[in-house]
Length: 529
Image (cartoon, rainbow, N blue to C red; front, side, top):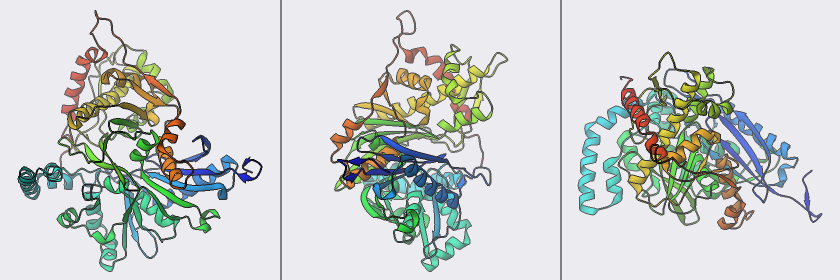
């Protein structure tokens, strides 16, 4: 039984589910934003072919149901004490399904999937793209509209949905047939879950998820009809785009026994930004999970990038739209998991101590690019590599090189963000599973030359979706109230280096960084078409 307030009213809670790349977790939050119950299950990725990364929709749905029931049970409360549900999901992982039956035509195609790499490369090099870039440059010269500048610089990537969806339409006959019959639904994970939770009544997404697909026009705030006609994607299959804080519908009572309002749907990185209370222009959030995502709040205008930072909608609540500029590195946690599989260590918690047990990596450089390289280098054909191995190399040297590579990619993204946005940075907050590694956190602070804060709880995507859902039902009233609920942080401050040494931690690393950048260049364009 749930605890009671004043002996009369049962305590109420907010339920939040985060569907990540490696796990699905559900938390039950009370008024103080404390986790009162939780449940987690693993997501098992499928690798049917080299470069293909998929997920089973049925397994995902079962996992979703399991964690919700498990978290509520863990809290010791009843389902009817849940005031609202918030959902945070990985972005750009999609499937298509039959509008009438809800049965998917194929597995989810993951954001990490590389099946469209050649298609992306050929389009980026095509005469069509050169012509579009040229026309848009002229338009920008005449109008000075940022939207034209953005279009003149657009580069397709495999992480965006666009060409993976083109691939699916080309290779799956039943998808093409359903499109022709008007029975095809497209959706990222949030859309598919909404469809399932409402028994097919709701086919929708929110602005944060839509803006991360690469098919959405963040300037016009709608699906891009120009892009869809350019690459032959049918607009009829796309979901309706709603506010991030919105009553999307209610969970069908046959699923959990009660009808629970779904009050927020959010992309995981934007949800983490909201969970970190990065509400002000210049606030930076770094999430280090399967990949690293660095976001800066750019206010009410989308950022136009020249080196692969991507403008996304952070959230739209009421009439307020907040934009973020984002850079990412795809293989942060993947690299550490890979090292664990090789038995370089038995417990991931030992890695920080292993890295500190040696003074340097003994000249070993690791390039963490199992899924290619993202901003600012943008090379989907880059390979992961270990260079500079010697007979003297130990496991500790290898572990240090791997952890260093994560901090080095952080530094690349941070420097790109500084050069591109020209926005004074107000605070830097770091979350995600990899942020629990003290070596990476300290080296990141050293390389940035700035204080970096780590919250007590690193699962910020769940909290962000809960915050938005809670605001929607009056569970919490204002954002100022949310800021007061934040857990105390651990601060990592740049180390002081004696003058007789290199002068600053960053300069101390100059030679190592130069070697690592050389290794990066040698890893580029490795996989040929």
